[in-house]
Length: 361
Image 1 (cartoon, rainbow, N blue to C red):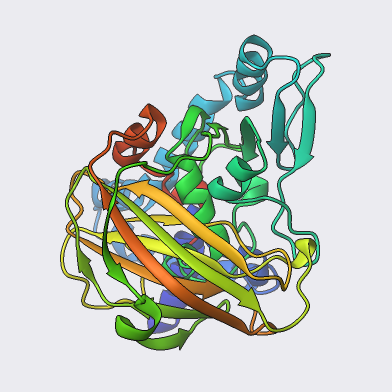
Image 2 (cartoon, rainbow, N blue to C red):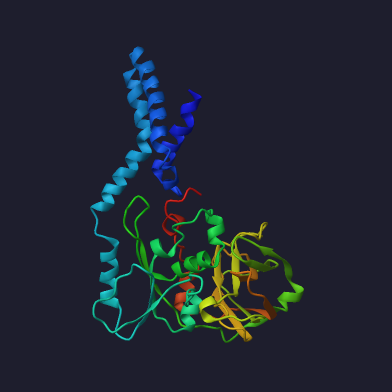
């Protein structure tokens, strides 16, 4: 009887969604035969004892998750497609002359005179991708298809995906969404969001309270699944205050816009972070370097209502480049930020089941 447990586990667990389920295609027929034989033995055992009611109860309990998923799936099929929700908003709210960044699989807003640019982080074809990059390029809106922009084909756990540039950027962007057309993973539909890109902002009145982070406040660097990160030490912060980080950065080797890399990162934590390998509860990032010329990178954000600590770091996606970071400074300001930044500090991020659909971690 023990031999039927693994096939039964595979058939029941992966029927609820999982990563790379296609890898089980070749063994599923054999697993189904073995599981069926085992199930028949159980049925015979129960029927011989006239306990048909127990059989019905057990069958219902085993299939409850699948039955629930089917009902949810059918419910979503009765609703309009998310694409209709997206196009309707675009036609009503986008204006001629707007600059719109869009991912693959996104419809156009009718016949309006709108400038579209591609939203991509593919190696060798990197465009303005994060909030700060899009803002610096004067983009008005980002129309994003999470199904094509997320990590649909990856075997990394959520925690690792969240810690990559792409994961950090998409979750920060989601806090600035003005429209979400989303359904849960049981639906066959694609999930979309429209992000209003705020104009670049830096507070006028601020107090510098930490400088030379690179030499005075830095822990050892850490290599991870995508690149390298140099971490600062946790800094106490006040919720609702604005924080600005600025650094002079340059690459020692050639760097082109399509291979842009290297960015500042601000992680907020609601308690003293014990393990700095993982992302904070809220993260804001700067734009990346696009050449080997020295650049001043800066990012301003608002500490969320629950924030108690801030960790400033520098991260690079690829180990092919060598970066030099100097003159790192951090400021705090009580100046009221634009409304978009205030709302984003309190808005929830896109959930993992939307950004990383059908994953087991």
